[in-house]
Image (tube, rainbow, N blue to C red; front, side, top):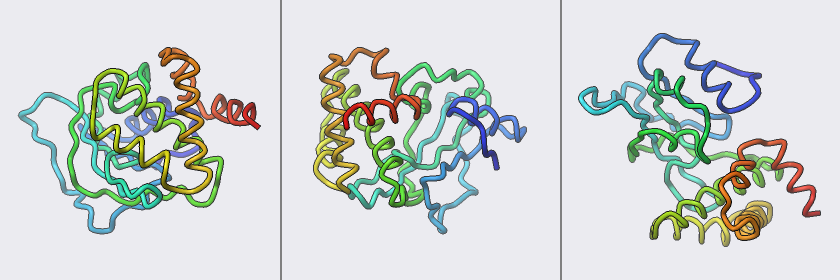
Length: 189
């Protein structure tokens, strides 16, 4: 278990330091792990090195996909990842494994809900700007119309932010850091 490390990249690298295995499962604090999840799952070693993203059920939106889900990271690839994209995991070769790893649990903390939702919607908007995608459109619509007041506000704030910066990547990348997200949210009040 790795705790009290600042930043996503640093925490994932520290987790990789804690083992010498080729693969590590990373579970974030917002995931309640499915008790039936098969931790004996093994990647196909004949395929190219990549990360494997499992599914998580989000009761706020009713969606089930890789958002906040458990990921089996290729340890060596993890070290090569400097967090240069909008999504740490999707920044490298990856594959979706449609096994339910758990349930998203953001609790009742509006700050956590707002940050998490804002980031996910920024990523969905960016994905849609790259290519038409029915699934991403469906997910975006769900985030904007279902959930708690804080999550729907965050989703709509993210859409407005994305549009206000014309999808400029460096401005979207600011959403990677909690501190910036908190400052931006406070500026909206």
